[in-house]
Length: 512
Image (cartoon, rainbow, N blue to C red; front, side, top):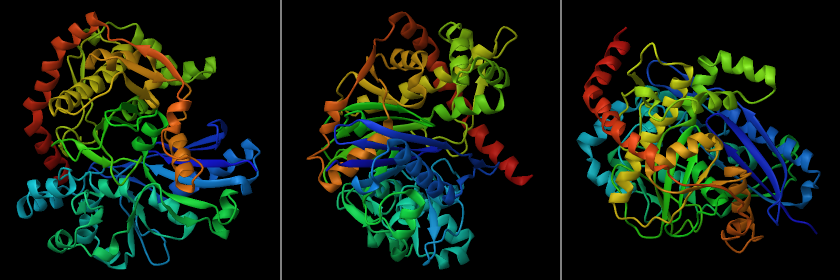
């Protein structure tokens, strides 16, 4: 009897699902895009139902296209953007829109934590900083600002947990997503710390129980079966964070493996077994052997800025792409390729919605510097690529200085990595070789592997290494690197000199 597996990834800009066989062949796949809700107060939200609808519809379409018998699908797993904060009542109905990772509204709660608990103590427990990024701070905001909703809350769920809950009727989480809830999650013991929760006044019953990523946590219900085409009773594996799933797909499962995922967020991660954590970086419990493995990573805006340009400023590129029948991003790449390295002195700070590593500044926003009449649309597009590249360099330097083992070349996948120019820029900035994962199905494929390990189809996660199809190898261009070295200190100085102004700007906006 044939064995098939399903993986889904809930991203910031859309959801993709795949059906694979046990030889790693993708038999069906589908993607659905959805918007982002933002405002001037730093909110960044999704409707949780978008997650479930997109997961259900992409799974159903992928199964239909694959022509497999749903009864032969042995397991399913979901990853997602993380962290997120979704409150559900006892009927498992959402009580509010999801605060996603880039939401900055819990700044006051973070200041309270710094003043009353202390960043050092929180880092020692959670291996993570204190920032509005983390889901527990978002839950604290709900408690303080919408106490009636908080009181009605049965469980907090993440963007991966919510659709898994809708599939199974069980409101739990996995080690990976729990680690990005932060603040009160003990990453060594893999449990919520009761003492910390009491001190920060969070009801422990409102937090979901955390399970190993590869553990079966429930089974597809009759209702979910009708919606997704999955057979009733199909095992659902706990799941993971999107970047972790992408690293699994790229074979980054062993100590020292390094990978860059260039989706809406750009994430540079290193896998390690040692319980040694780097301040100002993010620590996520890794998918592979989640009881014993970690990833240290940087996280920043990346492809989301490219999409912002396409949707708001890229009318010419979209129209040209429609006429030619190609992706608008291809047109944007062609324009940027015509521009000299360094964008002829045009610099962009890629901090459009506050930023995480390494600056952890909820007030910072984007900045264009050096704009002149000589600059074109192509300059602006290339400056986006280079601005994210400088941010990658800033993060990578800190990770290297921590002494963590890094296996090269670095694996590059998803989103912006599809652009040959952008891949080259990142390698030039980091001064390291990279390899592009050709025809990578990314995080959904990693989730299908996770499902396979969870239900016993695969012995371990090393199966991914057998299926890796390495595409282009990228060597850093030394001439370009020397140009970027001249601009990089200015990139850093632009933020440092303007840091105080961002908080003043936030105060003005809030007062109007």
